[in-house]
Image (tube, rainbow, N blue to C red; front, side):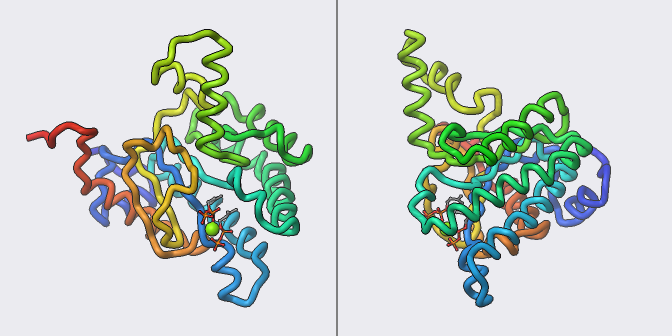
Length: 247
Ligand code: IPE
Ligand code: IPE
Ligand code: MG
């Protein structure tokens, strides 16, 4: 068993988490920002702002715990259906956050990847996200994937078009190769906050065998304790991938 390297790992081990059996890639459906805000009599955008602060903490904690990849659902291809005020607020928040976090992400050796149809985003949002990717591309720490204007069906469709254009054979490998972030291993743990029991079009190809963990806590209340609970659950699961349990 590896020795804890920092306070997060020390606390994780104290709770029975095995550092040699961590999920490699955690994906989060960060849901419940709106309900969290509404329950406090606040505007929904206050919830998204709080969700951003939560995300910063979760990224740091996941990194210190030893997670190698963290993917989060920031804005879905279907979220354009929301009122213009909320959509604009989210686009502004993403653009501002991308610019504000750049220095810190570089300092912390975080590699950022953006997943989704970037070309449909407002220019400032798109430019700031692309800059984040470009400036952190050689970093060697945790890989943080932000899904923006992301839809799983759209991603599969885009990949299929690329396979057809390249005249490649129709195999799982060729589709996987043309997904938005082909170099990232598939998530082994998928977390959804705010209690909804559905995928909402997130990583429907890559998460075929991900373990699912759902908590009733809304995203703004997700923290180290919840992350540890998800990892603990993950470590109790028996993964069979269609086969039979070993031993
Ligand atoms: C998730 O929170 C964040 C985004 C979809 C951008 P919601 O905004 O969906 O929050 P609820 O589900 O309405 O509470
Ligand atoms: C999924 O949450 C999208 C994000 C978290 C960005 P939604 O709130 O959009 O999902 P539904 O509408 O409840 O399925
Ligand atoms: Mg929601």
